[in-house]
Image (cartoon, rainbow, N blue to C red; front, side):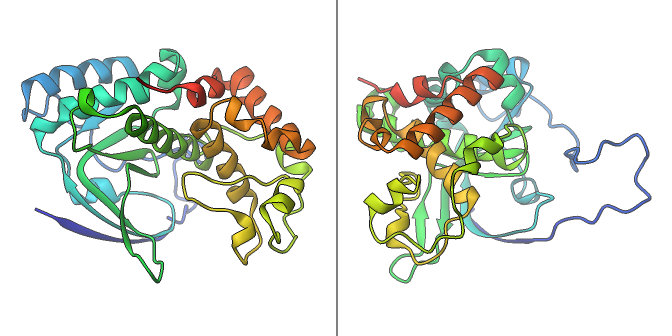
Length: 287
């Protein structure tokens, strides 16, 4: 059954009664561990058990509304979703193999993975624009969880462009999640050269001169907007561009000195500190 979710969640207040041995900022799981296999599809269950053993992450196609809404972080969001048909799970997992798992070293990915990955049959977000509200999205994240939407085609029937688009959106979402919840820490040097007090750029060229890039995930160009860009907007645009674009497609933007500097800081940080070859992710295209 289609379930509309209106998520208006408040951050929890941590009181002095917390146990002394609890680490500050430790992610709390409010629900008990799930029972695997879930029993809806034998082939899917076999793959999911192997994924759990490899990454210590639950890939779930049966879950409650409370599960998929759960977060400690205050959030305004409006999502609409449907649980996935168990018969569609294997196809989605096959797609995740080439658009997620193959892009990382297994031990690196294990350290980055959220506790739960919810597989959905439909996932929409209300973007709140005056000309369009509901849009289909391939993925979204909350605290210690990611929801991923199925595709309508068999993986073998998807075009190279369709697989690349899914890969790029999913990886931009995943890296945003990692930064938002402290799995990845962006160096201060990335932000140091940027002035976040500036008014909006008058053109894309001026935005590039100031060190800001287009965000292909959200289709956001700062020079078209009327608000000041934030440091979060900035790093998310770079992360999205890194996974959406090949190295060659960066060439024009890298002519701008500040963009080249920030690009190199991010690429080196992800590779040297976290073992993530983000250029490999961006350069991954399909036949």
